[in-house]
Every structure is written in structure tokens, then in C-alpha cells.
Length: 81
Image (cartoon, rainbow, N blue to C red):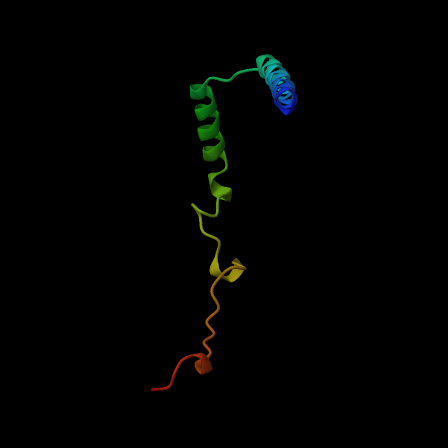
């Protein structure tokens, strides 16, 4: 008897998963697609337009960098030989 119940649960789960997959495919079918070449060209144009704002290309001055390393050394952490 338990075998029949588990088979029923498995088929219910399969139907539920199939319905979710169909809904996902319906949503994806309605989306506008962009060619990879067009997306790459748009990304390149965006990067070139914002190059002056990119701190990886034009570094932030050390005086304005909140993440700069502090030049503080604690001598108690180092053994005195």
C-alpha cells in the first residue's frame, strides 16, 4: 500500500515540476532577445564612456583611499631576539 502512495506523490511532484517548467518557458518566450555581438558592443561602449570613473583604471589618490594600509607596526607582536 505504501508503494502506491509514494508513486502518487512522485507523479504529483513530476506534474508540479512540469508546470513550473512550462511557466518558466512561457516567461522566457516573451522576453526580447539581444544578440551577443550587440550586447558586447553595448558593454564596450559603456566601459569606454565611464573609463574616467573607474578606480581600477585611474587609481584613487592615496589621501582619499579609505582602504589604504596603515603604516603602524606593533613591536610587541614581534619577538625580540
